[in-house]
Every structure is written in C-alpha cells, then in structure tokens.
Image 1 (cartoon, rainbow, N blue to C red):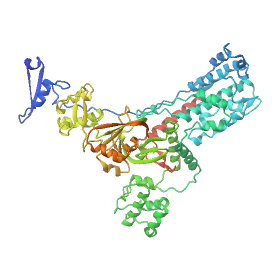
Image 2 (image 1 turned 180 degrees about the vertical axis):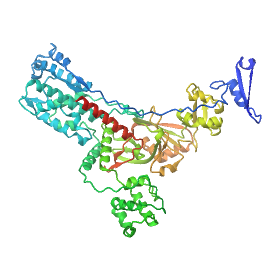
Image 3 (image 1 turned 30 degrees about the vertical axis):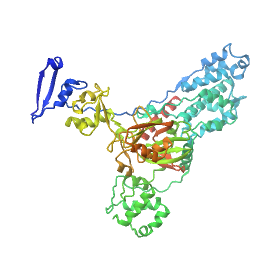
Image 4 (image 1 turned 45 degrees about the vertical axis):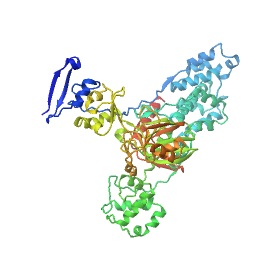
Length: 611
C-alpha cells in the first residue's frame, strides 16, 4: 500500500510542508524529493499521486456561416458632393451632375464598400458610364452580357441581375432621366459586386472554420470604376477580373466540358465492399464491367483472355486479381488487388453533377489565393496528399505527403518558406502533451524521461517528467516545454522545412516511411510529412540533394535560411488540374466541401432576399 508521509522542516524549507511517496516495496523516490525541496517550480506537493482528470485540448471548430451583409443604400452623400462649391464648374455642368437631385430617389441593395466606391467615383467623375442619350449604351450591353454568363466562371448570374423594374427600363429605350440614373448606379453596383466576387470570392473563408486562415483580399473598387469608365473593351476587362493563372483556366475548360458532356450509363458498385484475392463477391460482375468501361485499351488488350472468358462468376480468381492490379496501377493506386474504397472510387467515376460542383468549389477556393501564384512556389493539396515544387511555371517535384487526421486537420493558409533545419528537435505541442502523453504519464510518471524527451521550465531549466504537476500543465496554470532531441527515432526525422505560422505547421521527414505507400495518407497531427523531404529541402534552398545529405550527416542540429523566401500554399482542392491541365478529383477528406456549399447557399439566400 502506498503511504504518504508528511512532515515539516523549517531548517530546510522555511516551514513549507512537503510530501514524498514511499512505494509498497519501500523504495523512496529520493530524486523527486530533492527536486521538490530545492527546485519547487513547477511542482506540486502532490505531483506524484495526482492523476489529471479527462482534460482535452480541442482543435479549431467549424462555424455557422454568416454572409456579407447586404444593405439598402441611398446616395445623399453623393448629392452633397456634386452640389459642393468646390466641384469644378465644368464638372457641375455634366449631364450626370445636373441630374444629381434625382439621386435622392435612387435606392440600391448592395454592400457598403460597393456603395462607398460608387460615391467616391461619381463625386470626382460625374459622367454616365452606361447611358447614352435616353438608353443604355454599348458598354452597358457588354457588361450585362458578361454578367448573364458568369456561371462559366463558377458564379451565379442571379447575384448580378438588375432588379426587374430597372431591367425593364434598361431594355426599353426612350427612358426618362430618373430611371436612367437608377440604371447607371445599379449597374455600377452589380459590376462592382462581380469584381469583388471574381477577385476574392463570394465567401470569407475565415468564417467557415478556425482551420481557414486567410487575409481576405482588399479589392480597389474605385480603381475598378475608373477602369470601367475608361476601357474600350468592357467585356474583356470584366472577364479578366478572374484569377489569371493556368489552374483557373483549366477549371473553366473542365466546367464547360462537363456541362456539354453526354450522359452515359452509370455502373454502381456497393461502396462498402472489401474484396480480397481469393474472395467471393456478387459485386465482381460490376467490377469487371467497370474495368471494361474505364480501363485503357492497353490494359484490356493485356488481359483480353480473362475478359473474354469471364461469364459473371463470383470467385475472385488470380486472373481477375491481375486485371484489377493492372487497373489500380494505371490509376496511381497501390496495386495490391484489394478492391476497397479507393479502387471503387476509380472504378465508378463521380457523377457529372458532383464533378461540376467540385469544379465550382475549386474556382471559389482559388479566388482566396493571389491572382498569380508566382513563378516559384510550393503547393500542398491536402485531398490529393501531394506537395509540389514549382519553378519557372513547371512542376519540378511532386512528392507524396501525409496530412492531418480528421481529428487533427491540417489548416489552410498562405505563407512563406524561410528556413531549413537539419537534425531537428521536435517541440511537442501542448495539445499532444495533454491529449496523448498525459494518460501515459498518469500511469508512468517517468515515461518522458525513459524515452529521452527533454522537459524544461520556461527559463530552460531541465526537470524530470515525474516531478511535474501535469494537472497544472493541462489546465494551463503552469508552463512546461517538452521536446524530443535529434536522432533516428525523432518524429521529424532528419530535416524539417519551416514557414513560421500560428498553427505550428511545417513540412518534415519521418521515420515511418511505410505510410507513404497508402493511398489515403491522413495520419499526422496536422503537419505535413514528406516522402522525399531532402529533395524538397534542396529545391527550396537552391542546392543539390547531396549538399543536404552532407549537412544532415554532420549530425548537429543546425538551421539554414533561404536566400529568398518562397511562397507556400497549404490548400484544399477536391478538384485540381494535373501538369497536363487534366482536372483530377479527390475525396473530400475533412468534409470541407460540405461546409463551403452551406456557406454559398447561405450567401445566395441572403443576396436573393435582398433583391
């Protein structure tokens, strides 16, 4: 039985009570007592027998999306600006300025930044952009035509339609001046709304979840208004507001192809099937039919004998296993002959409408990123489990990656790679200490010491793990640092690549190489593990892999800064073009498509309610 002996010793601790534990075998934890007496912080008088309750540190959460607010705007401030004595006499006499009193009757449902930009523009340039005589002009007709067809860019034409009364007046002709002023301001509002959506997206990603971390783009709407008034190519200018990169263009082409695609017979296979070599399944006939439909001519020619002989049996024979393996190999899957979720996904293509939805979501997500991604960058797409290094517009490295488990999702954000660290330490995050290490420490207080972890106070003083009040650590009343020294068993392997961010996410090596053979690679706590980290380190440093190998072989923890930081996009696309421009589709790993669809639906509902 464990006995707790208490005594007071004024000579040693100035009257402070202290405790120590004698085990049932009579052994005294003398080291723990020494640490308690002479190094009391951050220990507790009952640190040994205190078992932390079931405390967990939770990750970010998903929110109920709140759309941008649409308001009814009047333009009294513009009337005042156009009436001011400070306005140049020539501008006070323009047709638009002389109609300024009619602006009192103009009401537009729009966003405040849009209304502000409209007032700012017409206060300095009080001229009609969209009106000529008593009707809309060529420029207006071009703008309306573009807004009618924005679905080809993944947007909804309904968001940019004039209200029915204004639209009727715009298509009439011989319209009175009051209606013309309404058309002018309202059409400007619709085009500026489109400019916002095309450049930065309809959705503010940071309102979707705590995993989304973007600086929402600041669109210079006053500049857009000026360009609209000056441009001779209204249609071209409005179209060019969309992202200007090859990825977006490939998505536009894919969306057009899907909408024109002729519907064909869809083969269905039970999604929960798990068929191993030598097994038996009634689904086998549909598996073979799908390979006949989806397999390449080369594959079907190579296995023509079994395809000709197969009569619909349920036995998964070696010949059929070889056929499935060939199909898996063609589709970048692990060629093990096991028919499971990933193989079925390749056998049964996504339905056309689902593909269209994913392409549209990809277009929205791409708008959250810079207009141009740059000539040199690293791109990580979580659903495809791939990290890509691009230089000069070419994908020079495509590396298998491991991303966070669904319970430890990898965030999405943009940052810059700054440093490569050789033989790194692993600073254990507090969430891992509390959620995973504390249960073990409650059973084995020396757990971290035995495994070689370093436990230190904030001042850097080393302390044994058994002496720490882990309950105080778990409740954040006491700070403690835990790190794993460099070595063969280090969780970060031999190298890590840093792009400092508040999520403590980085790319790194790992001693667990076997996991890269899996098709679905969601195993980490949120960081990105690379199958070829040395190649990525060499690429971002502008060095050779042999140089990186030599630095690692030195065996010393060392850091090397990049001569110039490189953008990195930690992204989430369930539809994304490959280097040839062919759009590939991936599993919605974290159900983020679901949350984005909800955000878009709430946004469209709010806009239509305001119309």
